[in-house]
Length: 491
Image (tube, rainbow, N blue to C red; front, side, top):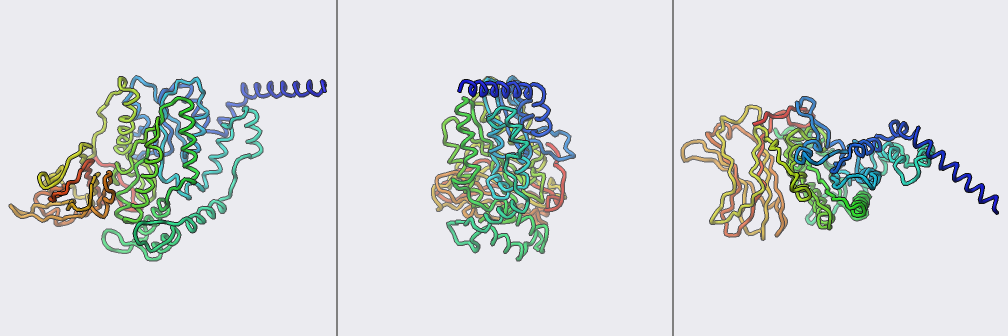
């Protein structure tokens, strides 16, 4: 028995020495070769960051012609010049990846606040069973809660989930076929597979009313990317719950950064059914995490307009500079609660030509004061390449008895105006809560022939509504599916 114990102790000592040798001379080389994620975490640790931004490609993607290619996290750092801010960014990352990043930050690090990207699409089957999952999971093996030598041994044994592209595709389609879609109104299709197939078969017309294969393809992409309902058993929910528990254990401020989606294009191309699902999923995340003690959720969901999305032929959260700055500013406003004395507004958010934002100040519209903030433009200021107009705003209604409408008034001659009215009730469906509406309208020959155009929300009824975040943007002809554009000029 004594000899057996001695052998056990000798074996343990040998393993300890081997692990020490591996850690000292071989570990960093393996990290460099096999785990970009851990390498980035180690760099952030060495930089002694107090604020850490965790993100995927949305943080760093920019238009190749942009002169300022800085990331969202870099813009965020401008608001806190006295606080060391860093990022850990890995393409295709999601909540599970972020959890591994966070748990590999040393307990004695100076980290105080973590900002974690919350991407709506990451809850969808196509991302959960992405072909990128296997290589991403491989990168996490060296970050397991075992001694480094043990992790290297597991990596050599390929002790991580490995599925072929065919298996991943089969699992995705299984969810599309079997996960029911539940609406509070009549809808023709029971699941995403039926919806997508019918859309592809029927085809979609473009703005000119003509069948467009690119238009149809993009519509189907949106249906497959956002046509789902988050439930408690979604694996991403567990991952975000794990992040909450870890941050509480470490005593970190936790901020979830809910990224902006292209709701303008969704509403204009697909319609109210998909918008309903996206709003429902947004509400699920806000209600589940926004009400937790010690957790802040920054809601950027509908705050970036179509003109600021780089990819016009795919569903991504890749933004031009203005979009990245908008996200950073909103996150900075949340972090201001933790660093009030270090906060500094660099006043760097300059809206592009053709983009007008009226701020988040709330106004009440009723018989006494029926007009909301108004954009007034001489029509000769409309650029010849502007073909579409996106208008978005937040509204709170206490009932549906009001008569609130979006109005586009075109002055064609003295005391002679043409007014187009667009009802808000089909989009503003919540009672007693803030909801948003977005409109995709043409810049047509009637508007160009007018002397002046006014855009505003109008409610002449006694039943009041509240309005905020009025946002108007004109966009050029190149912003069509399959066509790459260039960012607009700055004011």
